[in-house]
Length: 417
Ligand SMILES: NC(=O)c1ccc[n+]([C@@H]2O[C@H](COP(=O)([O-])OP(=O)(O)OC[C@H]3O[C@@H](n4cnc5c(N)ncnc54)[C@H](O)[C@@H]3O)[C@@H](O)[C@H]2O)c1
Image (cartoon, rainbow, N blue to C red; front, side, top):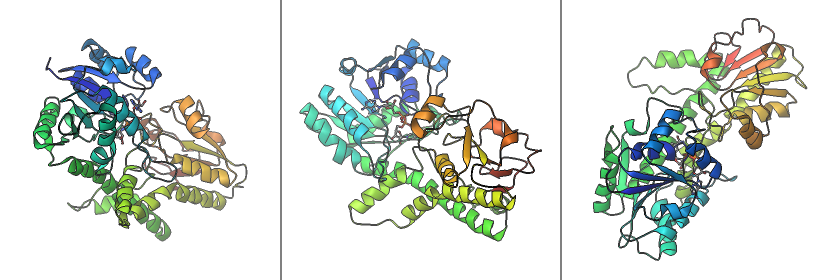
């Protein structure tokens, strides 16, 4: 075992795989405030499905300790923060989990400890928002008694190919010397290599623009989809043809949900507005993507009317509620926008998704998921998420119902995005 004792704060999609990876080389404590999560992990169950049972067992065999007790994290010398960074109702950054985690660490911080943040933030959040909390709760001085690092996470929920150690990782430290230490720490587990950024702010900015760039590119193809739909041209055929050029970027239209692409740009725009600059392109992209669910629902309604269906009370099936395919993550799923808009027209919506947790969906969206799909009885079917199981759906006898294929995966459809 190498000599660092690492505490990972927040054992979600990001924190747990990281704790597992570090556990092969270091003493690791996995800390989370959510007791049920700790109990499940102790029983080798990861409900995010990022780690399978064997992998959680491996971590346990490597002596990882899962805990919600702050006493257990007192003698660590490296604290890595992987708590959520959501937005509030007004689409402003909600730093509460980050602040709370910093308070927890501040209470146990000792001389020469390093606190590394992985959560996605705006440039400046680590040094301007978190460091003062660490100083206040520890009575220690930043860059004299303790140090900070930032290393943004790039994993992609549900992606079993690009797992944490196989993705090149950006690192940074609050002094050049600490930067090197942070970089060495990650280089010891990341087989894909590391990139040491010159400052923490550079690393924070790099992460937030990666997702903002994707958001804007998707907004562009979503806009194209709206234009081509009006022109009666199939967007996926256009994109397929254009993709034959070597430098055409292969983005696809769709709903932009989840806790990264649909959220992170607001961190950047918040910071920009704070310093008096109103971002034009980033916010336009966000507006466009945030309105796609309403657009899809209106298209479905028009098609239903064309097929002669009465809208009020008509049964509509929505396939998929998670924010992306083959993954149980329902956070910030924009499928809900399609559902709510269809409900406003008076449609009676059923939702099927075998990946999503029924209780979570009920709690988060007040939707009771169906146990099985009974395709026959619906006036419209909206394929919202490209789960593998939907790719082989037999819709051959659906002449009278509208099939709207948001993800362009079905053989038989009336419209695609
Ligand atoms: N999910 C991804 O694929 C992904 C990819 C790159 C970056 N990120 C970023 O990483 C961060 C974490 O995301 P996630 O998807 O792992 O979140 P998550 O919601 O899956 O997990 C966060 C965990 O932190 C715990 N937590 C919350 N407050 C805490 C506190 N004060 N102390 C200890 N634990 C606390 C929660 O109980 C939860 O288990 C976010 O900033 C996110 O934007 C996520």
